[in-house]
Length: 402
Image (cartoon, rainbow, N blue to C red; front, side, top):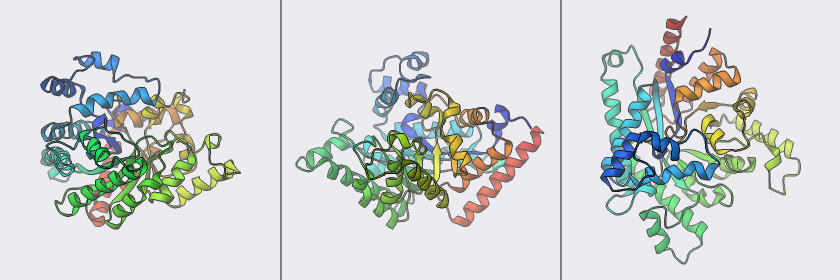
């Protein structure tokens, strides 16, 4: 059976690695920037696609420039709620039935808005979109699976006082402390807010994440925060192996207890290992791969994003996703940033199908991993029922294309 883009679009899908501030509609960014008198390089969708949200970037630094603009319009509860609402709609419109939206509350908190209020705003937008979608006749009747979501809060490996009002305040208050201690303290505060949002406010905060530059910012500084998350039954994912070697992935798992890893593009690259204690690099890679496989640690794969931020990746066919598949690792196809990477889940899956010659069964396996390895916000029994409902719908959609 030929796997077409139309088929993929109709299949029930997930996105487990989805940044809110990297997925704002460009038209919304322009509108909100005008309302707040924020300067943009252009005030047309076409102009911003040429100057900021491009098809190709020089490197990771070039890729990250757009976040300065998107974060600048995410300083109010109303704006955050709107952006989250529209993100859910965009996913629903391409058949995505489950998303985990991640963002860094401390990038948007400060002034008149607390971390808790930013989480409430994200939830309000996602909840409104969910209610509208699930009230559709085809969904409420049980013919189609409903839309569900979770929220992942991100701590930062590194920040300075220019990142946000919140970060400026915490740096100023701890002006005589070592940077690493401040980073760890900020992460602990973020996790504390996440625990309160979940336990006291009943918000679907399903996990925590650690983002930011890996080199020079090891995960050990955030161990206390991640242990606090674990003690309060929050799931854990970590950006690792994206801009640093395989040992970064190992540290994320062993130091922070990561359940999932974001990107992990360096996993099969022994040449960039820098730890002098690792004498046999090939053996280390093999052991690490088996370590991940045996524990069913899921890798959040973001193909387009990786191609845009890694100048050495010249062809999609050379992406380590091929090796992940060959080693039977648990993988889920994700967008990372829909706007910055100019992509959708449908685009990402279709690219994978063409570049790696995936069969329909391969696609189904990826979809199953997405649903099963999600940090689903409801009871496990409900999750099993939901996964089965989504995969039954998968088969129904496929039967219509035969």
